[in-house]
Length: 448
Image (cartoon, rainbow, N blue to C red; front, side, top):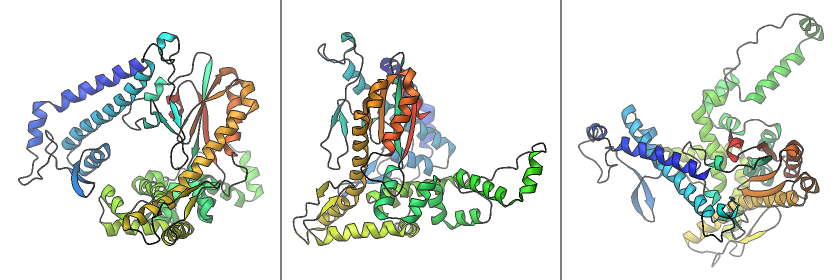
């Protein structure tokens, strides 16, 4: 399967290279060059670069993120087509790099237990416990380095044997749920407990145009709000009318209101980005570069987010104050694991204070997520029910667990897996943990 996937990706790459090297395309691209340009251009495309920072010096950058930004920046459809071709090529390169590491793990020396010649075509990655936050990392190969983009199903190469099924379960919005608990933020606890779309509801709190559209009845927050509205309207109707309607043929349903995610996709995307990035110390400077905003505009967006969830701002400020005032302070996770901030003195340099603040803010989030996932892994491994059904844990990637076992017990085992993962800790959180789970033939099928 790996060789088939690799050949398919390689074929795509060759086609993209041929198109990008077409002389007629390059001639048209050069016509777009302005009279005065930067010393660096994307050769053959005639486009100015996005400047990133490398150390203390500005430098040109052509990472996947930069190419995506260039696609959005260019208004010409011709320029976008060329850039998308280059972007696709880079994505295929990333996919091939990941596939090569998987193939080398299978095709190593004859003594390699994963060598197909030995009758075992499985990849045996190494899980490490040496990360500072307590999360597991993988190597040989690094399965956590699987490219997220490119459109090719690398995960399709990971499949269950005949008569077997994979159980794939991951935590939904784990970091947000933990922060809501740690900061005791009632608004976020309420949204996550009800099951609403946290990103659309954050956009509603941040952007006036979204508020006006929702309050004016032009759009609905999310599917949950539509259901709640319909139930409330039904409850307000007299019982006699409801009984009479039940005897009549059903009327055509009225047109559904558009959702915030449909009417305001860009604002929802920005709210989603802030929901996660601010928890890890995203600054106005880096946000401005990513979204092509001035630092002042980026600062206003960040202030809007914290205004929507003030308890989280207060909690983060307290963590930073503790880091600033105490050179021996430690960051603590949900289960009490501590990580020293490693300050040389109470005053310290600007760089030391910045690092201490990042550790103080990141560790309670990432470390607590590690507490949850590792506790769930322990419960899953020790479950007599899963053992009886013949399922065993074979992989953990980020917030996702993958088990394998007999197809005939997949449904029962899946229910047990969800139950264990929803309640992994020795105490209850203020917001329930959400687990998305399914049983599939290949790892890719879980993302369908």
